[in-house]
Image 1 (cartoon, helix red, strand yellow):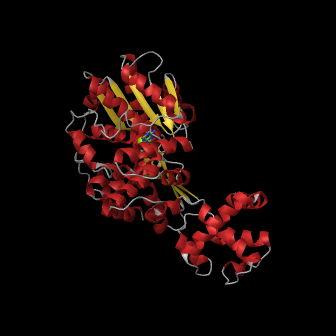
Image 2 (cartoon, rainbow, N blue to C red; image 1 turned 45 degrees about the vertical axis):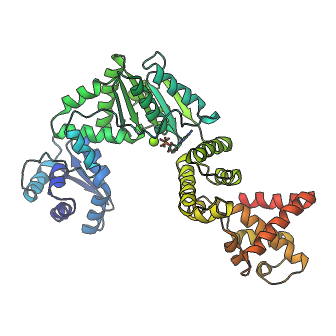
Length: 459
Ligand code: ADP
Ligand code: MG
């Protein structure tokens, strides 16, 4: 059955990849519903696990249905199972030498570039500069540190600079901004790489037997930036290599800048000594955005686009899309593109329409049905009256409140809301929303009722 799995794998991944990675696998013991596969090095084990782990489990389970789990381990010398099976594998896979052309599944382009070796210079994204980074409370510290390092790399206390924070909060932006600034001042060599690329390059260097050159290149830069270091969790060999590079550079007085999604101490899965060293310089947290910062970012981007976006629309976006600046930006860009394309002014209505799908994903997940249910319970009317044609005040008012809340708490458009209330017209919904808002201004007790309702629904 292992032979069949091998030949299926070979068919799926192709000769090159198969010979490069998979012929090194040896069968280990079977224990209950788990089979152990053995690999000669930790590096190979990690690679096979990350690239083929799931597929191996699937194939094994198809072949031997009692096997539920495939465990990948590093073979110890003298492992009893290893020799027997290796020969079996060797029988399937004619022992052709592994070709040097990359059989890596991802980012093949990049490896191609690496294999012309002498290119380690930073490819910086010119869209990201200090000038267009909007500073606010949540990021001012990280921004200040980044500026400082760009002005005076390798100063005491700022090396390494460790930037961390959630997705889409500006880590990569700041790193590119530092790079751009440094290059503009001239006379420094800057290398920027995601940790993932770092690993691919490292692997490619091993395979083309050019690790020395790779190391020399890395160690010859003045400033090395590695983005998204969390990627190296579980990639022990690459971590090891990074650690040595890191030490060599810092010892030689070069600047290192690293980003990650967590603080050094929270990056469990990174080697302790690496975490310790990462925390030795300046550690700067980029916090989640505040409403104010989101508004400032939107204002800046809208202004740069030349399209007039009403404050109401910006507030709406800042209110709806809260976690990730990239998505906020994407939403605004779509609005702007739309406005340019159709030459129509940006309005709140148009926004809800154009961004329908994005807003839906950011809905606070209150459904119109829930709103209707809660509101009818509260005012003691029948749920069916939410869609009925009855106009008695005792029924009509709660119905209007439900429409108002649907508008506030979901990203449904007016026509959509109308449909859920017995196919009413969107102007009816609009009227209801305005009426409720007006009543809330005049009647404090009513306003309190509606607010209470809203809070209950939001939780
Ligand atoms: P991260 O690397 O932290 O995941 P990025 O740096 O890629 O996030 O930022 C995501 C997007 O949001 C980028 O387009 C970036 O320009 C933008 N962005 C994030 N923070 C800011 C900010 N404070 N000012 C302007 N743009 C920002
Ligand atoms: Mg990033």
